[in-house]
Length: 563
Ligand SMILES: [Zn+2]
Image (cartoon, rainbow, N blue to C red):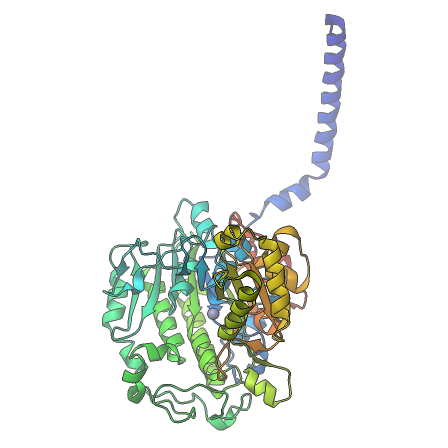
């Protein structure tokens, strides 16, 4: 470019910039009022406290089925004064407690966060691992191994981590649950404390040296106060049992029993059943487990001074006893009805205390579940609904026979767990066999057993991008590093479980459809039937607070929820 050309270009550019800046000035004058109005409010809300509540095994229909039994200050208050997502689902399977708690708080699914089940067969270690067990840490508050836990198997950050990272670790994050995984996974990698209940002969709240080397004074005081001892009392229904019209007969063949009980009728005499049922562990399978969780959560509120300054704190509470009761007595039991009536009272107690200590309108709450549950299949069968039971040992025996006949060895099938078959890749390689061919042969063989609705192979999970329905749900739960080689989808209402009580884990609606309620500061009043998904919760709370989404987020903020 010569000098003259350069000068022409320079002048032209100058004129263009001047005219553009004049235009911008005019435009900005015209829009001045609008601009001022928009910048008046910060693009986030700062509640003093966020309370995340997960109710273990809470089906969506527990909101509606027991509605008339609830008081005005608990579940009804959250629904009437908050936002109710009525078509909220888990978008992955297996639907278990560990993956559920991880997914709520990470905004993604096992495919990304890696918590594929509660316990799973670890391919590298060639042994079963527990989702939060970590032997590199010590128990704090107990001599047992109950405290040797950490969130290290979760690959990503949680909303609780992001809140702390956002404000230089000034936010306090405390997580509590009867179950260790119900506290450890919501707390994330940076929690100030996560506490869970150690039953047996102790009945104490404990933690891991991952968080601290000694229990804080308020936890020691709580443990020394004998609150747990106070729940060693008979479990009778809170209201007159005659008013419990939304559940089956009090004593029936679909319910499990505490050891030492002749039938499942009320009352359950905890002092008499104490020794035979693991002492303090029996509290877990009664609504008293939820009550002591509420007691302890409120002690944390006080002891940690949560929500007392301008920096947002986070209290993660998980109610585990709803799950233990559902597993033992089934979703249609009087015990479940009573457990939810009592949970509603505990929720009311928590909300009232938050009003008093943090201030009405100064805190934000969400309530959801970690999975749903199936109606007891033996009950369904008696009502002529297609349902049944699957015996994993029988599947293993049949498969061993099949591979012995076809490949000359039973060593190929290494493990069957969580609806997945793990093959021994070394043996497959040594026999010079094709992994994908064996996967396909096994899938076809299993389909002939009459227990599956469909079967997928690991190869299919790797090579396809499923966007809808059950294949997509499986893929969202399929972690390439950790998941198995053949994926079984049992027929609807078929479970691998005892013929009494309920369980969960499937990709079907009864396991995926759970409540999602938002309430409090920054939350709109309203409801929606549009589909929302569990991974939407963390980005919704992140958007409300104006903090970054958790690192693996695949969900989206539910914009209607936020003011
Ligand atoms: Zn659970």
